[in-house]
Every structure is written in C-alpha cells, then in structure tokens.
Image 1 (cartoon, rainbow, N blue to C red):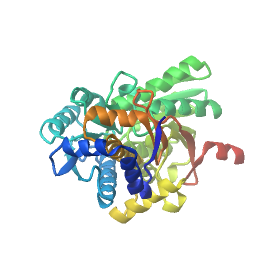
Image 2: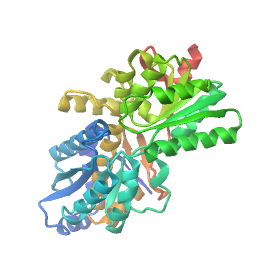
Image 3: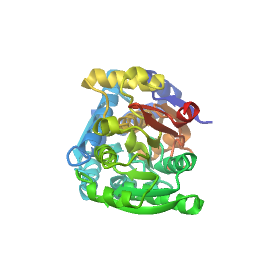
Image 4: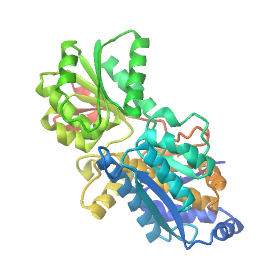
Length: 395
C-alpha cells in the first residue's frame, strides 16, 4: 500500500518526522552509516544568466527556501542539507558538465534540474548512469515515458496543457490559426503538438507559422506575416520573458482576437510586459502565480507564497518556483523515507509513496516519471486571470 506524504510548506517538518517513524530503526541507522559526510548534498543546475535567467533564478530561490525550511526543522536523516548549485546559462553542453560535476566531484545524492527540458534530456544519461535521482522542472514530454528510471517531473507535463490549449480553441470557435514559437525544443514541441491536434481535428486550419529566437525584442516582421494571413486565433509558445513583449506588439499592430498558449503565458513577467494588452489571452497550465497572496487558490499555495515573500521581499516571477519547491520537498522526503542516500532506495521511495505539494497529489508509481496529470484553462480579463469556464458563464 502506498503511503501518503505531505509536502506543503508548513507540514515539512511533520512529514519528515512521520516518514522517519514509518521506517524501521535499522533502515534509518543504515542510512546514516552509508555516508560519512557531515551534510547531505543536493544539486541544482539551471540558467542564472542568459535569456532564461529570471525564470531560472526564481526556481533556484524556491529550492533554497525549501532546503532552508527543512534544515530549520532538523534536516533529513539527522543531517543538514547542503545545496550545490551551478549556472548553465541555458546551454545544454554546460548543463551536462554541471551535472557531471555535481555527481562526480560534489557527490550529490539527488538533483533539482533545469526548467528547460532540453537540459533535463541532455543530462539524463549522466544522472541515470550514476543512479542519482533528478527532478527536472521542465514541462516538455520529451524526457518522460522514454524508459528513464531515476528522472521525475514535479509538475504537470505540457502534453496535458497542449490538449487543453487545443480544446480552448475549439470552444472559442477558432477556424484559422497562426503560430509564433521560440527556437527552443520546448516551444517547438508544444506548437507541433497543437498543430497536429488541429490537423487531426479538421475544424481549423493553420494559416501561418513563424519563429523567433529567445531574447529577441522586435517581432514586427513575424507579426506582419501572421496578420496578413487573417487568423482568428494566434498560438504563442516560448519563455515568459518574450511572450509579454509579443502580446503587446500583436495588439499594437492591430490584432484583436484571442491569443492561445500554455504555462509561460501565466508568468507574472508576461502580464507585466503585456500590461493593458493582456486581455483575451487564453492558456492552460497547472497553476499560476497570482498578483496578490490573498488570490492564492489553495492553502498550500498561499503558505508557500507567504514564506517566499518573507524570504525574498517579492513574489516569484514564474510558477517554475512551484515546480522547484515541490520537487525539492519530494526529493528530501523520499530520502527520509528510504532511510538512506542510496539511489535505488530513494527511487523506490518515490515510486512507493504519494506526496502532496502545491500542484496537488503526486503518484509516480507507474514508472513513467510523471506524478500528476491535471491542468486548468484560464483567460485574462481586465488584467486578472480567471478560469475560462467562469468567463464563458458570464460572457
């Protein structure tokens, strides 16, 4: 029978204590004996510089917050957690070097991976061979369901959001779709998935497809081409640091229709950059960072945001913070449940228990690497994010 472990912000200490009590004393002792180190090292890698730095940084900050809270409540296996962190600048070659260093030099027992799925995929061979658990915080489906044994996702796969995105297009009566996508594997795959759904559905046509490079600031050329095709819906995929600019430029060049996408459109920086032009943006995601803590949808989310703001003086710029926070807590609780830092034992603890975090209840028992599969579709109206269902009810 699976055991249920809670990863909410104020329940971390209780969860870890319960986990320790749930294992027999011999397992706990073995766990302390199999490592003579004074601390338990956990690794983190991701972009702290480059075009994806703002999102990478908020994930890093959330990881640090989780570790600080756990350490203040006694750590794991009777030891404090030490975070080893490296900036990969959003470059997959650097990601591989970082993970190799984390494993071979720093000897970490688990890793919180980048929000860029290409980096998670690129590093998975290294962490898999070493039998080191990695929680990749990217949402692309390219690195799950491919036979990896030690790689897990602490959020919802974007495949579920892509279906929700397509469904929202159907709901809103779209017939002609133009697309604009970043060069990243995440954006390209997300767009390709929705395009496939459109072609299979037979209710819409793709009238234009454009691309851009992450970090671009002028999208007028692509927008001119898209608008010339007279779409009644535009699909955007890329990073939140770019999408807000694109939304604003689309509106300023005269596009008045719905804009569709997935979780990057929920980033606070998207809303800030788009400003008054963000209305009628529709996106599917697992969660989003509200503008105010009081607007949090669950107690777990509110607790996390309260602690994050108290620690850093601001709210996260992206829901990547939620992913990293849940991943860090699940990893640490799995180590405590395993009673050891052995990779196989940690993996079995993840597969054999359920965990509750900001995203909801995680169950990794099917071995795919996915632990949660629920998402919701939202729309921005009057500068606020509301569910698409409530928008349609009051339209």
